Length: 227
Image (cartoon, rainbow, N blue to C red; front, top):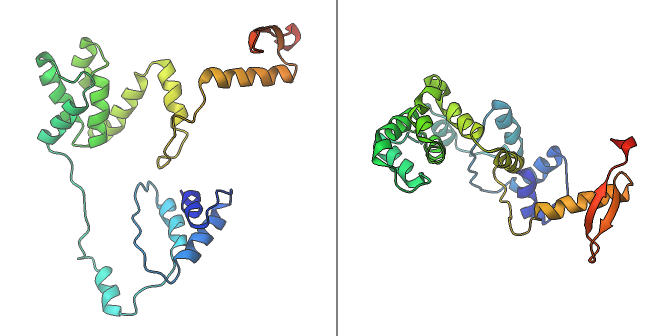
C-alpha cells in the first residue's frame, strides 16, 4: 500500500524499505492539510505502524482539540443488514438467478445465519447455487457458534471449491486486497509452463526429445539419475 502511495508521489516503483516509504509520505504531508480515510485494520500493531507517517501538526486552538477528543464526539458506525435487505442481496447474487420455491425457506434460514454481514450473504449465495439439493437443505448444520459463523461461511465456501479453482483462488489471494490485477496482460498457463520447461532444458535437467517445426517442444524426458 505504501509503495503505491509513494509511486503516485514521486513517479517511481522502486523497491524501498517500509521505513523509507513512511519517511517519504510523512515529509510530503508535513505542513499540509489532508484528509485520510483508513480502513481494513485488523491489529493494533498495524494501526501503530501506519500512524508514523502522519505528522504531529495539529490545531493551535485547545478547545478544538478538546472537542475532537471528547468521548461525546459521534462516530459513524455501520449497521448490519436487515433480514429483508439480506434476502434481497442473497437473491441478487444467487448464481442460478431465481431461487426455486422449494429452497426459499432453506435459503432464508441460511441468510439468517449470516447475521446481516454483507460479505457472508454474498459468499453463501454463490455457494448455495453450486451445491446439490441434499447439501443445501443441511447447510445449517455446517455453521458453528454465533461468533464463528462469519468465518465458518467463508471456510465452507473455500472447502467446496474444486481443486483447480482452489489453486487459482490461492494464487489470487497472494495479492494485496487493494491491488487491481490486470487480466489481459497475464500469460496463459500453457505459455508459462512452456517457459518453465524451456528453462529446465537449458539447465540440462530435462532432455528435449522431439520438437515441432516452429521450434516448440513436442516431447521431452528426464534422466533416470535425476528422478
